[in-house]
Amino acid sequence: MAETGKPLLIKRYASRRLYNTETSDYVTLEDIAGFIRDGREVQIIDLKSGDDLTRQYLLQIIAEHESRGESVLPVDVLNDLVRSYMTGKVSVVPEFLEQSFAMLRDGQAKVMENITTMNPLSKMPGFDAMQAQQEVFLKAMTGGWKGGTTGPAAEPEARETDSSEDLAAIKRQLAELQDKLSKLK
Image 1 (tube, rainbow, N blue to C red):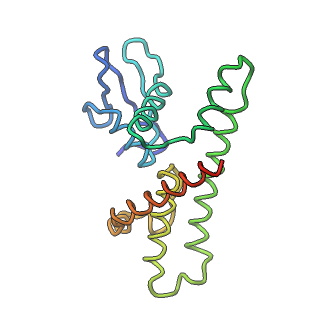
Image 2 (cartoon, rainbow, N blue to C red; image 1 turned 180 degrees about the horizontal axis):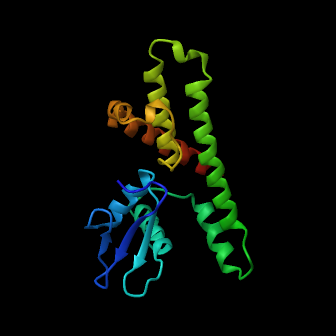
């Protein structure tokens, strides 16, 4: 396995095929989205020109999810993004979003750390199962952002116990909450 601090290098060939330099095979946009969901940073480089195409491909992944009816960003946020780029003025929106996501990742990591280390209930029978459910919920809420899970439940054995049905139910509930929130606006 490659270093986790180093981005996974994906090369785009002239044929527009994407090549994973770590595994020496071709990948799709969905594969790249999977790498990111798993916490990997990726860098997509055009083989011929050497241009960094990462931003373009990440935006394409978001656009494809949106086109399939998966609401990635609320319409109000998309409108604000378009406005911030179309005014011709220097915008604070990109920096604000970056800082917001960093705070969210840090906050999620601290919550999980507090659950595992400072909770007096951690000695209670069944606490491990409850903790695993909380982690599944937080992961569903944040889409598995990097740095979001720490502690023993992030180990492979704990992930195997996560039920895909539970995750689907949590995602469904989250989608319902998002719909209700968007209707309140």
